[in-house]
Image (cartoon, rainbow, N blue to C red; front, side, top):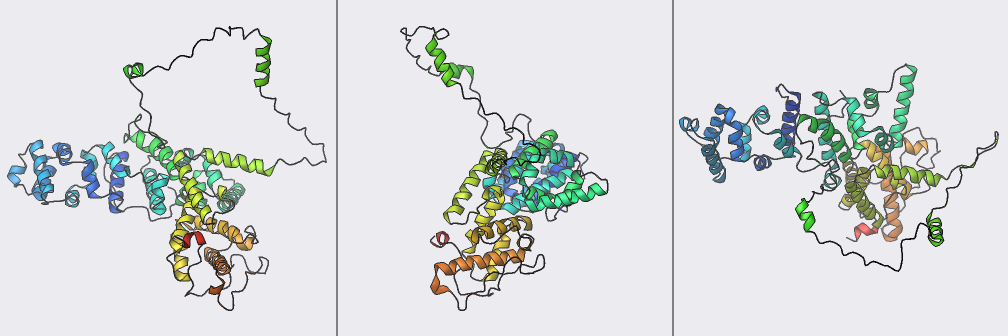
Length: 489
């Protein structure tokens, strides 16, 4: 199975015979264990009548719930009709004799799947739409962990293969979403495999880029809809094949009945103009208008350069625009809206990285989250923790910090190996140093004496990965180094 970063699984293992049922049982347990869903949510989907009707084929279990949950006498519980049992359970819940959490302890995990509707169980686990950009913004790490758990669960139960997983994500998304550092690592791994005469298959891809890291760079909505819904939930029968809008961006527009369509008022017809007879095919003026409406022919491609001569290079801006358009075309509308909002917010506080188009939406959302939390931090240690807590993994944090360093001090070359290959601790210190420097420039009275030493040049002879700016005091009485737009709130 794919290599995992850990922390997304559950100790419960279902003993049901069907792989799809085991997957669903383990998913229900997971969302309850991690408090993504609550017992009260479960009872919203499965009311007392649903529970008692579903347990008609398990009289002993139904009697146990009535006895221990509703306080019904044992002899009476076994003779209750479904309607009477449902009424007793409803009254017990209304009067506080039992509650949703107690009832779930009486329902073994596998029995929930064995006796209850699978579509309703799947709806219970996914009704919060945690994968959508607007919902995932509140808890990026939690949403990522849930998607990774579902993928690992499906892979473990053989409902999904690595090939189907990567086909669902698509190689185009992987190649355009992975940051340069990860792509470089993947190329090195591929070259090493080539020398060993081994192919770069899906297993080797995830050996180089672990599953959680890979999914962290892909829009969760894309992964959920194209992999988990299309390749797992629909084939397993958890979702009607014609009842799910894969884009989830806009509800499918229902078709109007014919009677309604006929009752719609017709648009008034335009008055006829007899003064203009239908002679458009033969009249020269019309032909002239047609010639004017034809777009001019595209210029012929430039001739190939003669041997030994350099061909003028195509505009780099045009190439970058084409790449950006390709990436944007793969984003769902909901993500585009979330991305536009976070770009506006970062622009308003002058913290939008210059090459933000190359950053993924989760990275931009994490940057915005970082600056919203820095306001309450009063020490450098608290600020460092705030930066770390704002990103789901170190890869995203490194990408974001390099982009911010390029913004905060354009004189620093982030492609220099000393900067580019520095560890996360060093990059955090550089960002804090640059933020403090900006704050002191705007507030000269708050500048300590003597001021911190400037950042040494990249070619100062440090070893790879040892970048470190001048030490900052662990405790500071200065306000946190935030942009003016944030401090004015």
